[in-house]
Image (cartoon, rainbow, N blue to C red; front, side, top):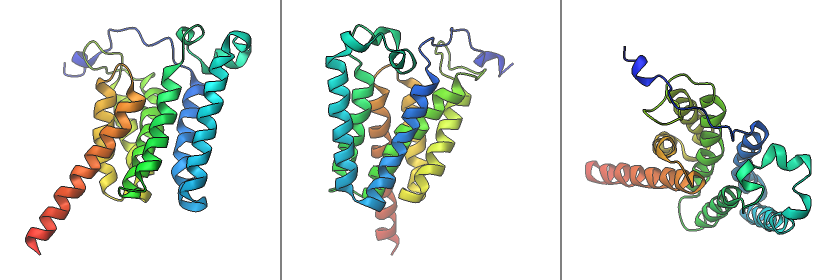
Length: 206
């Protein structure tokens, strides 16, 4: 009876593009590049990809007939500006820049929540059977996103990745738009708050 209450009644999104989500997952490589090759390299690469994307958007009317657009762009992005990929790149760039000021491990883990957590939430969730109310998003997708975000974020932020994964995926489950912006910064905020609480507790009990 409990499971029946979560039965999906809303048609699944027809805009799901497997290759696009695979590319989405590869965003987790930017923290790795930052660690092993330097932040400057990672920042430069993201900036290059951002300008490349903007350039493609400018010439979209001339190249949208190519098959690449059919596997990477949603139908509503053929004619309009594709804001989701831009927000994705901007969020990664912003977090890399914030890593110069904030705990870099937390910033890197936030990128992982965006890339792996959000990516898996869609890849696994599209096959899920238990939805949230009138939403097409599934409990299975959220669970996969949390697990993936924690496991892949742990090398960067340790146990704080648990707070980041839960916070980011909670927002993802409730976001209909702009989740490429809200998810990573919800994860960032969740980890910063948990770090503050832990440090406060340690200072009080020391």
